[in-house]
Structures are given as C-alpha cells and as structure tokens.
Image 1 (cartoon, rainbow, N blue to C red):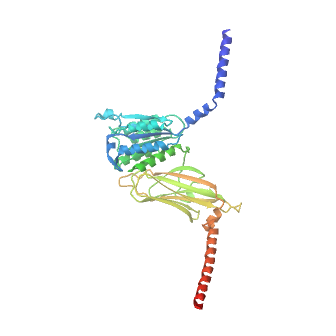
Image 2: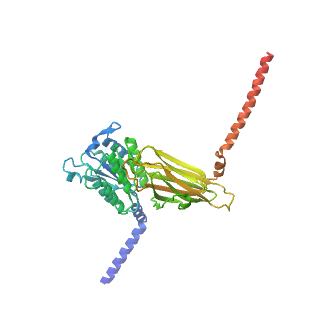
Length: 420
C-alpha cells in the first residue's frame, strides 16, 4: 500500500514537472539569455579630489554624474549594468579603513534607470582612492555567465593604497581566463595617473582614454557600454612576417599580433575574382608616446605595386589608432581566373617617450573580411565614377545645347542692332 502511494506521488510529481515545462516553454530560453547577457560594471572614483572644479566650469563629480545619467538613458536593454564606487564613504585619515572603502552602489543586473540615477545623485566626494581593491570587487560583481564582461574605471588620480599595485590586480584578473576587459578613463592629464591607468587597461586588452570635457566622457562610456553588447568574437593570435613572401596567409576573421616601434608587419590574403577585400587594423598606443605618430595599412601585389592604402595619424594621446582599406577584385567574367594574393603591409611611426620600454611591441588587432564584391565594382574600379558617367554625359549635352542657343541668340541680337 505504501509502495503504491509513493509510486502515485512520484507519478504526480513527474506530471507536474512536464506540465510546468509545457506551460512555461520560454523559461529555459530566458535562463539561457540571462546567462549569455553582456555585463558592465562602471567603477567611479568618489575620492576627495573629485570636488575640484576644472571640467567645463563644473566639479569632476558633477561632470561624472551628468555623464552617468546620459549613459544610463542610452544603455541597451540587453546589457546587465552595475555601478561600484571607491572612496565614497570613509572621510578619515586611517589608511587601513580608507583602502577598504569600495561599495556596490547599484548591483549588476537588469537596469532600472530611475533607481540607478537616484543612487548616482547621492554621491559626494569623500575619501581615498583604493583602485586595486575596487577592481577586485568589480571582478566579483561580474562573476558568472558566458557573456562579455567589461569594467569601466573612471578616476582623477592614481591609487593611494600601496603596496597593492592595481596593475598587478589587473594582471591577476586577466590570468583568471574569464574574458574580462578593463577600460580606464582619466579625468586629469597627469603623467603618473596616465601610466597607471594605461597599465591597468593594457593588462586585460582594454583601452585608456584621457578626457577633459563632459561630452567626451559621455561619448566614451557610451561607446564602451555599447561595445559590451556586441557579439563576442575570439581573436586568433598570429605573427606577421618581415616580408610578403614570409607572411602568414589569413582568411576572414579577427587576429591579434604585436608590432615593434617603427617596424613593419606583413600578411597575405587570397582574393578570388568577383570578391572584395576589406581590412582594418587597430594599434594600441599602450604607453607614453612622442607626439605626431601614424599608422599605415597598404594593400600591394606580390610584385610590390601598391593597390590601395589606408592611414591615420595621432597627436600623442594614449589610446587606439585605427585605419582600414577596401579592394574589389572585380573581373567576374573569367571563371577560370586564379585567386590574387594581396599583401597587407602594416607600418607605424610611433616613438616611445624617454625612459619608456619599447618591448614588447604594441598590441595589434587586425580584421580581415573577404566578401562578394558589389555588382558595380567593375565600373567603379575602371572609371572611378560608376553610374555617375550618365549624369556627366547629360551635363555635357546640356552645356553643348545651351552654348548653341546662346550663340544663336547673340547673333540674332547683333543682326537686329545693325538693322536699326
């Protein structure tokens, strides 16, 4: 009798589970979506120095609050966003207490914009600058899930809690292999702070940016939050050659490399007739550079003839410099035509500042995409105007007819004048 009751109870439980699965078919999908959601933790420096009024006539704290409010309005719905503070609560002189002063202002999760803005509005510049401890806690905030994870650190000064080095903390986070990126933004053009924030970003493949205006801060944080929502693509490590003949052959994809100061890297890409090569490169100026530097990406034939180039220049700002190019190989008509090997040459004109290490080389991110060329690629490549030729022809014809009419009218007026 007891066995029958247990069997009946187990059968009822099984039916209940099946019924729940039928009634809520989207529950499993929702759990999977949550697990893969991108996460961002905004870490804001609320130390006493944030009271300084040198950003667009406002205090650094006021500028940060304004930027945060605009960023919260623009955050994509799929992003799980949180806010962590450092130096917001302890105003005293006890370093042991000041260096533990980091708190989660808004937990990482679905964003309630009103609640998050209310939390930001309460911030008052207070104490120390414990960047290292805050980074460790931020990494814990973002734990779990398979989506991208990004820490955005905003500070106006270097860490005040030695001997813990925030660079070492960033390297520890990177060594955990959890795919977490730390981007840093500095509110003051300070050499020591720039070196430290650059080191933190470099350790995890992030970027450092110096911002001195509220709109720059808003735009950069928005860009980083949006980047977190992009699909995660795992880059493939490669090593460019010293010449085209020694270069690796790349297919469509995302690649990483390192390039020394003032050197060249070569890569090869096979482009079939009727295809278009699209390539872009970003070089991280991850240390203090001399002003006036540039990056050049050239597509050349195996015989050294330049096909097309892309170039970009910088003025000494520690960030990322990017450029790209497009090359359509448009001779579709000959189906038997072989693929053309295009050599990509990457050159830089960076020079490190005095006392700055030049090794290892600067991080390079290369995107290669070989796609079907546009239908009018042959016209564009051959003439440079594409469909614009018909408009040019119409303009020439109209000009010719207008000239004939004007000449006839001029002769008629002269004839009438002589008659009178």
